[in-house]
Image (cartoon, rainbow, N blue to C red; front, side):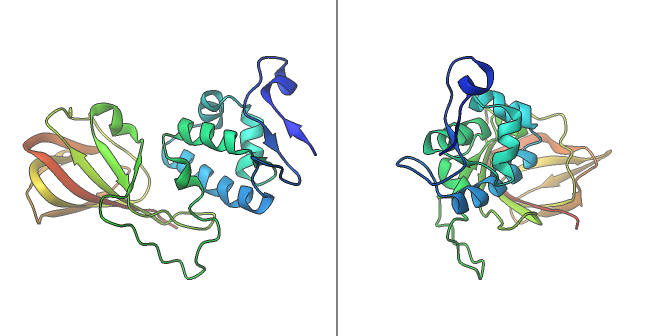
Length: 217
């Protein structure tokens, strides 16, 4: 059984093991590894992180992470935990497609959306992912976003696709390009994601809003 570690690749300190054959205790089956790798890649690309960014934090090489994402290497449970930490998500998010329903229905109970790290996180914004798609490509991402009185206005987001936001609670002024839009509960706004956008003023906190990013084919 082949084993790979940072020590064997670089001569340095050992890191979480990666395996590519029959699983032993503490290791995941190859079929699980393929599904996990596809999810890990989507999460990484969705956060705008490079292979090197994530691999360095997880303690593995960028080449090994690439092999993991394409299903050529199956991670150990230890590596799964390290990879999830590097991506800023719970390990359960990476495993959510394993043995999933082919019809594709996903139910997320109230308050149990997976908290994920995105660019606004460091500004005090909280993001809960309400669904994650199966398959090699994602067509949309729904988030429950919370802005508190500790949140700072982010200078601007940009991303592919179209975004739709719906205000559930609180009030804010939202900027898109050179225009500003006051938004209160029940208001919605849709816009191109590649134009700089983001909260301009937080007028009544806490603010809770649904944000759905729809990606182009």
